[in-house]
Image (tube, rainbow, N blue to C red; front, side):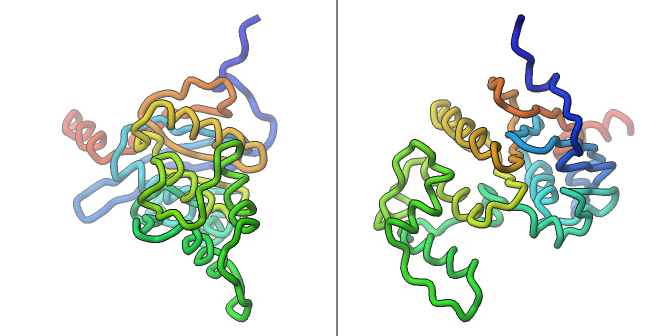
Length: 240
């Protein structure tokens, strides 16, 4: 018997993300939409759609960083953007979590932990134990980045894994990770997918790519129409 493909799996439990007819418009016209989504709970879920500002905005909407202008969005039962925000982490989106290159790993971790803490708490500079606590769940078997290394000196994969680790310190139910297409190396892309699959054991992980991901351990691969402004423009030309 052949193994069941990720797309054919069924889930009796409630979906993590349910979107109905969500849309976003900007000053120059449609950004994305209408989009309908049913993303199951747990595992790595991949949205398959063209790259562009629309796809970025859609990921930000799913993570509660943007509010759709119409339609309904529910994430783990939450419908308000601020409530969705509190249940999600977002990483790998340059518009939100770009890291200055001339900053050390130690400083990045220290700053994140201070941001996470109450204002009255004293948070010392990160040490090896802190590095392990923050990064090991994301890096897994990969070597952790040295504390005194500058972000710009890290490998492409390590830079993205560190961004995920910094965003995911609170381990919320939903983790949204920016586009797989921005990882230029096929080897690094495969390693990143392996790490996202592993994180999906304890969280619902959502990412996006142009092409299908060839992994049976992926929870779902969901084709998304109307996720890109250029795609919408072509559709409008055909119906005009």
